[in-house]
Image (tube, rainbow, N blue to C red; front, side, top):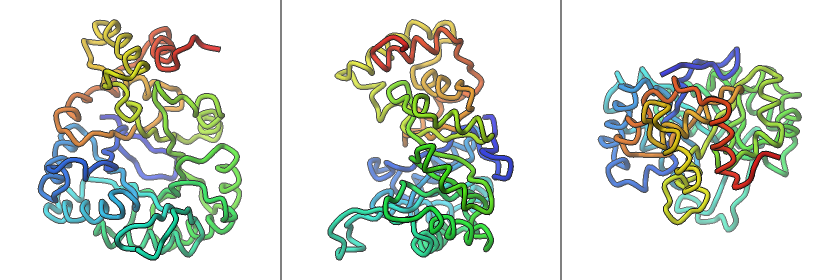
Length: 303
């Protein structure tokens, strides 16, 4: 698996990150021992990066990851952790909350990061992302929290998730160190970062984006989804050209082929599917084939 620095000053990560959004959807993956087994499978494939978030599993996933890593310090020492904060919803830990809200104020981000450190059982977070833009926080306040966390050594790099280019630029203005990445939804089914300037901005300032929901939240494998079936049919036609690669591998290769050189976050807990992604970072989808997949996902020719 290729490795990548999302920005010149950021730590190095594997080109694919193991995503933990749906850990509690899988009984085997939602135990410390079962999750550790998946981490070991990832390491065998060269996937050394874990992507998580404070809110995942309604605030339970980070603690599960910490318990799994505590079972094997050797595995823990070989993995990097990316986490996110800034979304707060009603849950069993906060029955006082009545409405979901965003909060990326400095004080809140610092508290969330410190909680993540405790739950994950690490001394520093390799990358800490603001999960969603907060409509009621000035970017200077958000930057104050991120800058403090970097200065205190609690995070090695800071970035954002789901930011528009304008929101990214506004926050960057107040940062003491450059933002490392913007994690956004990107797949043949969601090409918004191509059209809204997000990937252009990343290339302009010399950072790499992260791509979440690479198979469109499972659209690629949904027999009832028209777009998923169109993309799947195109990939079946192209597979012999790319060593009979499966749809999963071709979909990830399609993402990684973009010149912004994204880092992709997996969405599966199944070890066999993770193994099926092996080699996707070495597949370069040819130009006409890339556009054929994009057309199938969009359901329309290029503009």
